[in-house]
Length: 310
Image (cartoon, rainbow, N blue to C red; front, side, top):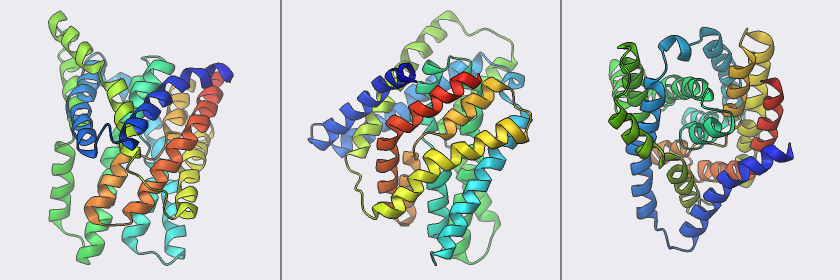
């Protein structure tokens, strides 16, 4: 377990470096926004395209894997939603809190970290988790928030959701990579080297951007934020473990990757949604800050445990 913890420390040290740069003002919020844009649209997209271009759809898609992750995530999502409604929160706030409880930083933290710690074979499972998060739960929050504000569901909401998915570079790069893989053509050496070079910036860039963005986060309403962090770091991976190991026939290695991905802290894009819709951004901000801080220990523990399974 100590060996795993020591392996994860460098990742969190880069996050800490970004946090220090942001906190001291050396790296401004505007600089963080531009770095995030570079990683999101270029470096991470190059990494995802390169990985998926060397995989087949059969290697990526596993219906039992999807059902296990979907079942477990929906279970925790419903618990968080129910607790929010019992506290007399609106549907909008309940949707945002549920998002905090189940959507982890798979893109910026999970893809670079798990592919290095658990091997490149983990990337197929991580991409599947990312796809479910973005397509199912990323769409669900838009539908719930927009529907509750309009008072009814309409076709325009589905159009908004579809357009949002088409504009997401992570989804687009995975689809394009798998499409290239379907041609059975190898990537030209020049293109492979280009993608490898650009994708290599994803890991340090993403981690530094996470840290720098945390510098502007505050820990207001720490009790609710702490409860949401507990849901994300403990309850979500526990539910995923039950589903993957006992309820659905998922192979040990992808099950281990799925559990590790579920243990990641609250994703930064939840804050972007909360800020965009004006729904409890401080609460989400605090959840990200608390969960990312605690993840230094909890993620190491989970990865150490699942390493035995795989």
